[in-house]
Image (tube, rainbow, N blue to C red; front, side):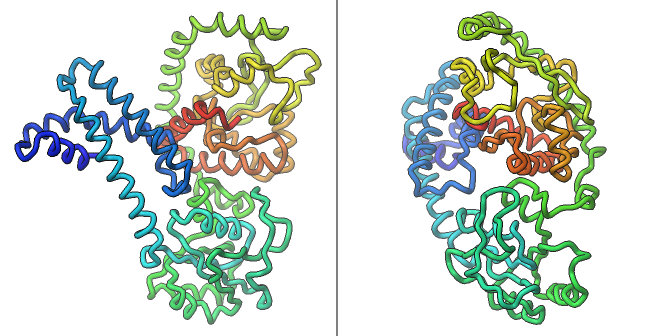
Length: 462
């Protein structure tokens, strides 16, 4: 951005560009560049699963510059402190920056990430369904920069790469045996002898070994063989950590109670949670005042379309499994409603209710829950008590999501998938909730906030 600004000023002023003149523009454009970064982030411009050779990326590229251009015009022509009026400069800046950015993305994707010298070779010690999911993800999204090079499977010398399992894109993986999936390059080796680990690591240029079994499950001879690889500077990582890094969720089938003891530290998170609660209540108070004038209009639209109360109240499970009454704008018809869990394309949802859900306006009354301290703006979604009890019996570690205060939005909601209260969907939802439990922080909350804005714009994730 700064390089584009300097080039735009050179084009506009020529060789007479002075440092003072450059600094004068840097001062004004620095907050503007920060706004651009936020806009691009909200639009998902920095996600590594979007390559520059797709139509969707081009639309995203165009939309990002369109919104950034509008923000720039507002900044310079509404801000009284900005005494420069860069009409031509803005046009030059966007043209040069768009060119530089597109060239940089092309070089990054085609000349750097795709270059085998800069890619990280990965070997998997053990073969599980989670390993198969990872390999498929690495094949789909090459911008992640990882290549699966070999599998070590001591359980079967006969198993080959052609014995693929069907991946159902869920938590449990496929229904077949645990065996490696096929790779686009067709070069993933399968070895079963621990003595072959060292020569295979060298021949395949592996930089990272992912341990797909617990430390206690590894035989002593295998541990000794892995230990002997330290001299060739190979990194080691456990499967749950690598899986989390790739998918941004926790594989519940690959963890145990020890994982929680090692990775969940709620005492360390207490200072941030205290500050977060203060900001929750301040922001909730401001939003309550801002939304209050619109409440009568929303209430009128709800009443005109269907009979019933304006607000929908329902008992939900809060922090430490304490029940509370959650309040929302009613989005469903009362007639013939058995109040069973909502499904995708549910016919009970009214037309105006569908709009309220898509735009998250139906969540506004939960400001009262936040002011009471029952909820936060960001956290795991609260569930109904009877559903929570049923899910806790069927899904391991489900109760751990109640260690945090529930939220209006959360990591699971902004991941763009619809999750029903079914066992399979809840397992995947729990993966995201455990990720948030482990990594709760200001930066993650900011990311969720930005993604929530994009989810509201696209009307997805419900």
